[in-house]
Length: 398
Image: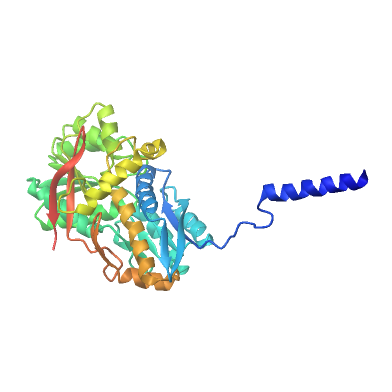
């Protein structure tokens, strides 16, 4: 009897091992992985813009999830750090990515956070690709920070030239005190518009301020012909609505941050007119001169609709923000640099980025100058309608 029991126990053990299968052949862990850090705000006043850039990055990753280096396939993984739209918190987010040993970094929306986080990437010799951070200080003195967007001196000239073309002779420049992006772009616009013979009235406000009624009444009394307001998505609807309520009926100009459909939604919900709002940006749907942009738009919209969470992060709209295109191009820049470098070493990858020359990306051809800034020759001007943003003009700058 004991012998029979022993035999039965042995059979049970053998069957258990066969059923489990994995005991003799445990899963291998030799998969090669490259981790790319996503340094973007998903909270704070730039959270909506950060989420849209992340969508562009994620869409590119869905198309190019692996890269071959020296004959071996590497899986690319994304890891995230929320800089909270706050330059005082951006260093912590940057250090989180450094501590994870990322090969490269993508982002960010908001120049102040890029400027604050950049030194940590440089110190660790981790190349970073800016998405829509346009302040010149992002790349100045930092050999490891690049960007796929144009920069503020370029953008401000485009805005100033467009204002002059609209017949504006006197403009108000409204900027957020202490914000590197807003203050920097405002200063460049003042310089460019004055050089074109225009007159400027400068006004600044504190972060979080929403009551501009007194400011707008004063500007209306001074005969302001236009407003230039390089501000956040959150602030834009208050400026638009209160300017119109004060009787300022000239054009309201802005910069790339206003390329967000949630601004239209909020202005219309508040019962104000969105007419006469213009801004400079990097990308527009339906650009017949750029087949890559059209292919991106078609593919991205299909991908967007596959997941309701993606649509939510895109302000529950199929409208494609230019910063989403920048997120896509930033991912592709590091992807092509990895292919070119055939290495994940930071210094080698940095050199590959510096030498990169890629035609036909979504926001145009991509190559970097000696500062790591994308070489661009024109800006797109969009205008707002209740149905979304449409092309208004393009400004070429030699």
